[in-house]
Length: 181
Image (cartoon, rainbow, N blue to C red; front, side, top):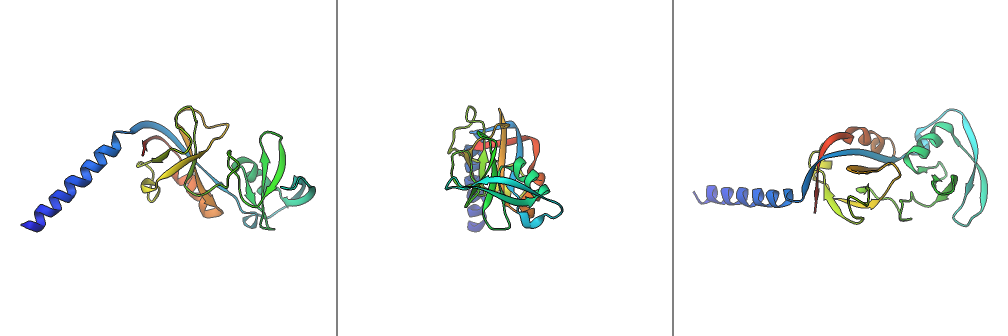
């Protein structure tokens, strides 16, 4: 009997925690994902582009064309040489970096999300319980913004490489619930 009472009390405690968390939840969110492609996953024809290094040195470098196209869409890509290249929005030129960079010039980390800062404050932590596992239990942090992220749209950074790219498709969807924590 004591064991059953303990189970009921734990259940009530967990339900109360869930209800408290849901008080800061809202529906109707569009969730997308973005990732960092790795050039090692690509092949085919190559293209030479000018790349500006962190020391402002301009170099001509050669990359797979398909890799460059995906890196342009995703923001940054990991090169065969181990650095990252991105087509920077404000000057429309390729830049290199030791890590993929978010809008605040900080390294992108898995579980970062891009948001519309008019809707969700930067550095806000949140959970999206309607995403598929394990994403539905991960606390995410709003540390990025993007030119296409407007209104109730959140873009989840899923990491690097093919698996991360696959995750972007798996989590993309409409009418999600977002809970601020």
